[in-house]
Length: 144
Image (cartoon, rainbow, N blue to C red; front, side, top):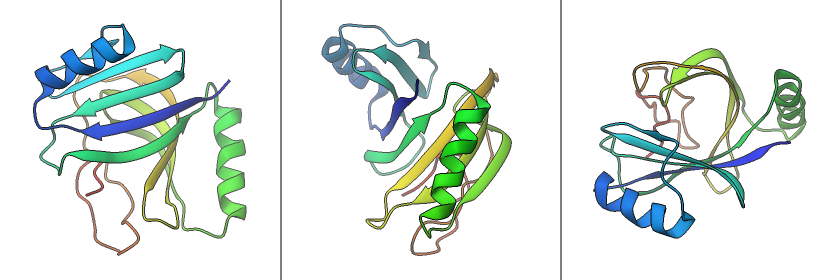
């Protein structure tokens, strides 16, 4: 079963952790100095926040696949959608190692489809595809 992924850039991580923990009635599954993530079952969502020097607000949306087969199905569907798709194998980002497909929807919102393979000890440094305006991004999960 797939899980919706939402990543929000925040100004104040501690304040945001308090807010989202109250909203979700749960503490983060992962908490770092610059990042927190909730793996919720109701609703089934991977909700992440970070303070990585970007404008606060929606950073990107995504679909987290439970296995590589599900991810490849998503990649095949994206290929049929007539959009630019950037595949990444073994990318290190958001304290995780994952296989991914990045794309940008017609509204300019970045979408990350991914299957997590393992955790890593650092936020990560893999770059993402340029956005709809072809502005190159230098940090993992960076869109704005």
